[in-house]
Length: 179
Length: 204
Image 1: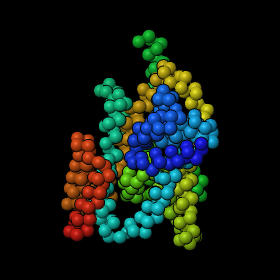
Image 2: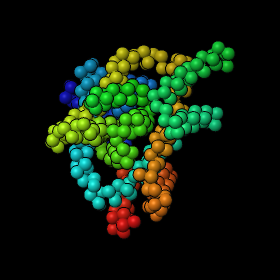
Image 3: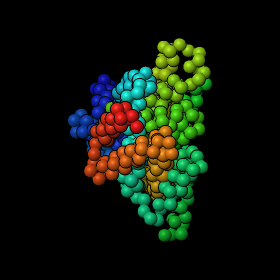
Image 4: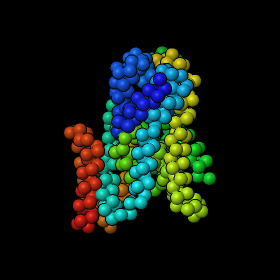
C-alpha cells in the first residue's frame, strides 16, 4: 500500500510543471478516478482545507491525501513521493548549470530568458486577482501591500499577519453592526 | 552558520505562505535575496526560470534550488572546503530548504485539518481570508516589481538596444501567454534562442 502510494505521488510530482495548482487535476485523476482511494467529496474537502492552511499547495495536498489513505506513514510517504522528482531534477540541473553558467552561450541564452520569466511571474497576478475577488472596492489592499514590499522592503510575513487580522476585525465589525 | 539560518528562514516561509508557489517567490525574494543576500537577483531570476521548466511544482523546485545556491555562495564554506565537499554541502542545503519549507504546514495539517474542515464556512475563517486573498495578490505583484532590475532587463543608459529587446520580450511573453495561451516552456525556449542569436552571434 505504502509503495503504491509513493509511486502514485512520484508520478504526479514528475508530471507537474508550473504551479502547484497544475497538480490538482492530475491528483484527482490518479487518486479519485484510477485508484479510488478517496471519494470526490473527500478530495474536494482536502482541496479546500489545503488552500486554507499555510504552505505549498503541492505539499499540503499530498500530505493530506496520504494521511487520509494510510495515516501518518502515508502522509510522509506521499509527501516524499511528490518532492523527490523535484529534488533529483533540480540538483542535477543546479550542479550542471553552476559549471556552465559563465559559458558565453549559456549567458546569452539566459539574458534572453530573464525578461520572459518576469512576465511569467506577472501572469498569475492577473488570473489570481479574478479568483481572489479583487474589485474596485478592495483593490487598494493589493496595491498597498505591493508598495510596502517593493518600496519599503516590508516582509511579506507582516503583510500576511496584518491583512488576516484586519480581515477578521472588519468581519467582526460588520457582524456587530448587523450589515 | 548558513544551515541553521536556512532552516529558520524556510521554516517561517512555510508557515506564513498562504498563496501557493508563486506567492512564495516573493517571500524567498525578500528573505533570501534582499535581506540575507545569499542569492543575487539575477541568480534568483535564473532559478525561477529553471524551476518553471523542470518537472515538479514550482514552489518546491524553487526552495530546493535556492537551498543549494545559498550554501554554494557562502563565503565561509567556499574558503574552507574542497570543491567536492562544497558540492555535498550544497546538496545538503537543498534537502534542508525543502524539508524546512514543508515540515510546519505538515504538522499543522495533522492537528488542524479536522477543525478547519468543520469551521471553513464560519464567518471567522471567511473574514480572515477576505483580508488575506487580496493581500496575496499584492505579494505576487511585488515579486514582479522587485525583479524589474537592470540586471534582468539590461541598463537603459549603457545598453539601450538590449534594454528595448528585453522590454519587447517581456511584453510579448505577457500578452502572448495571456491572450493566446502560449505554452510557457515553449516561450522560454524561444527566448533562449533569441538570446543566443542577439547576444551570442550578433553580440549586442
